[in-house]
Length: 185
Image 1 (cartoon, rainbow, N blue to C red):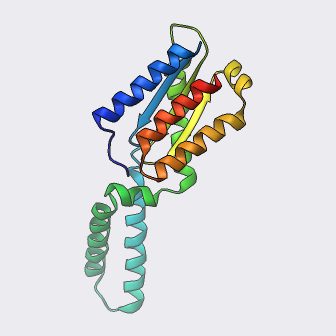
Image 2: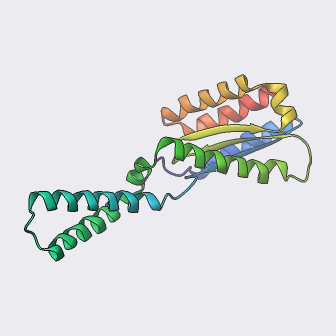
Image 3: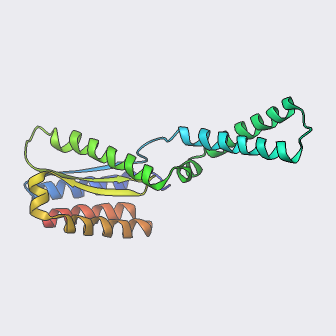
C-alpha cells in the first residue's frame, strides 16, 4: 500500500480544490482514505482453513498420531498464520477484488452523502474519492452535474488518475484530476 500523503502533497491538493471551487459553481470535494475497511475477518478465516487442511493432511500422513498432538499442531498453525496473515499487505491480498471494490464503493457513497449532499451551500457538487489500500478511485456527482458532464468524461478522468498513480505519482494524479474536473464543470 502506498504511504500516506505528505503535508506538501496535501497542501497542493487543497489548493487545487480551492482553485476548482473558485472557478466553478459546484462544491468540489476530495476524499483520500488509507483503506475502506480493515478486513479483520479474512486472516482468521484463512488461518482456520489452513489449520484444518493441515490437520487433515496430518491425519492421513500420520494416522497413529495422538489426538492431542494433532490438535496442538493445528492450533500452532492457526495462531502462526493468524499473526502472519494479519500483516496489512498480506491481509489485502486475502480479500477478493470484488469485496475490496464493494467496500470502497460503499465508503465513496457515504463520503459523497456526507461531504456533498449534506453541504449547507445546497449547490451541486462532486466528489473525487481515492482509497489507497484498495487502489480504487471514483468520481461521484449530483444528478444535474453528472448529466451535464456525462459518465464517459468522468471515467476518462479516473483512468488518467489511475495511470498517474501506477507511476507512483498519487498526489500529482489527484491534482490533475481535480483540475480536469474543474475544466469540464
